Length: 104
Image (cartoon, rainbow, N blue to C red; front, side, top):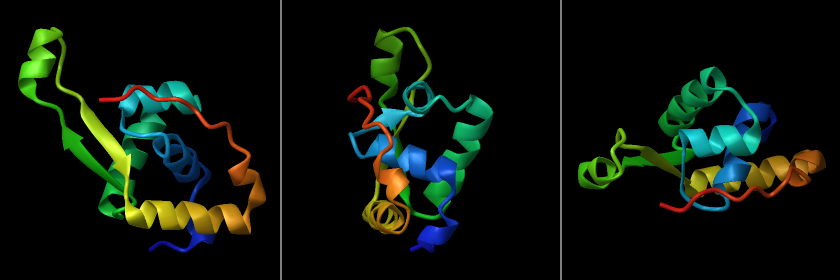
């Protein structure tokens, strides 16, 4: 698990957003106010660090809705632990708004 002192502001915001449930990149951008050039690289890094887990929705669902398939993310056990430790160490993180994200 990463050191909470090294958990970036971006990672903390994303983890906080994912505490509410599954979300895809655009959901996370809307909730956090972060731009795509920040969110998508952070999601890749956080998935590699095993703070989050990603999975693609079915192509059939995307085709029915006439759009590209979405990659949904959820917070992992390690991500929950990292966020909890960061919230203890930095109380302001705990005060971030609890956003609502779309459910898969």
